[in-house]
Length: 207
Image (tube, rainbow, N blue to C red; front, side):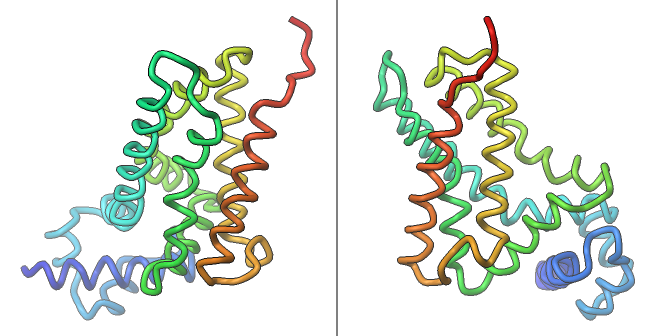
């Protein structure tokens, strides 16, 4: 079976997952949309779970590679010193925010991000967020270096808050003034400033 069939299945699944949700979308609906059959899904993916992973992976994996590249640059710039907190934050959020400008995949990616954060199924969340695991650990380690006054659990919690704020900024149409490059960059700057302030805020807890 051809790679073209695989791409059509991925494209169809992405559209339907974004429109109706992952749990609500059946393999039969996907194959009908793609003009394929269930045998093709089984051949290329093996299961719906694997298909979900590949749908998200083809959007998330390139972003994660860019995140790591940006993070490594920020850490190299710091040398043995304390890395720049704004540089770490921007390394994480910029690839996803700038992906919104993609005329073909941008809007679909935004809706997929929203689904990943609102899907009720624990299995779906596990599939999606497993792709973030290594990147999340790398960024939490970098944040701990940049914020030595915070304990590990606080760094982990604030990293999760950072993910949530980024997802909101991407999926709420009022968070950006518009789809132009200028608007996305302005929103990115605002988001980075907001996150830096929150990440380095006092804990308010007694030591």
